[in-house]
Length: 428
Image 1 (spheres, rainbow, N blue to C red):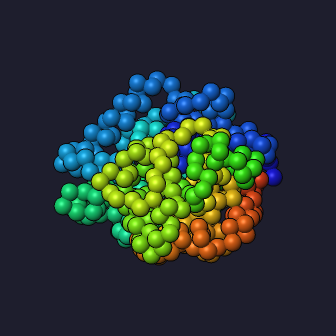
Image 2: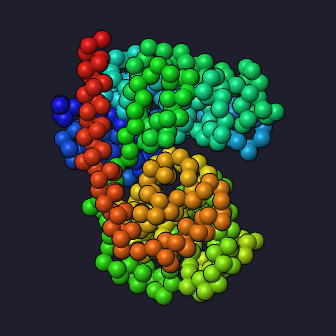
Image 3: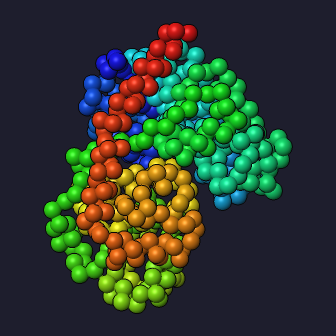
């Protein structure tokens, strides 16, 4: 295998959001295994020399605003679903950039909100370079949405979109964008990669991807950074040492799809069923708006808002300090947060949705609760905190991460895919 190839990873942001974190980790994993990988982003947040930003930032802002305005108009000037929809009508042409010209393989990740337009992706395809596209959500397989949330239209053709006013129509924005994607994908030879087997299954059911190359490769994590600690993290962070700690993490803690309402209800149920836990348990909330999650809601446990944490070392210590990590999301692909918690030896609890059951082995590395069941979520929290063998669970978590999501495992699978894509281009 040619490991000395040049790979350009393209993502809207360098560090903000799960896709950005995963893309940047993959870049470093590839670099550590002999690949000359670079990253191209719209929003650059660090001084990493391996990451380049798009030039002419004022135009990038215009692309973003113009697309949002058109979506806003399609929503009849209602903001409710403004950022649940993307049409890729505005974006940069990256084909003239030196980073693009030098690349052997172009690897797209999350490229919405003004990074790339469908026209821009078409230019990339016309260049003749092999294209790999990692799906961090369902958008490449649907008309305009990132989360299907039970909608089945993408299996035949997107139309009458539930995100549009009045449930859309037979020729609505989702249908028109669907047709543009259909024309883009036809004979394009894109190698689509889902981060989870669940999303791979969803993608294979999409009529858009019916004749496309679709596989699944998980995200990578650096197990030299995310690993068990020395047991003194609570004292260093000033957290309670006499309580069992539940940890919830989200970029925006009040995001309805992350399931905070279910978590708070589960806490109340656990306290009702096991009154002794009221004084023995605390809830840590890490993420933006953390201080708002309990407004107007009674919580039986001490709640400790940690806010948004940028420092990776501090974040690792928080994972290590927790007794259980909980993510009651209503929709998930392969969440980095579960991977991070497990790598630090912290068992996880989440709903049976998306890629979560692939990550959390029920009653071995955590607990997989029935979807949208606060009662079973409470059962899972109590089981991990007060019934399970914590040492055995912790060891099983670390072993699962090292076997499945280590940099080496993921990098080698992508290198194999890149070589396959290059070989197909040369053959054709």
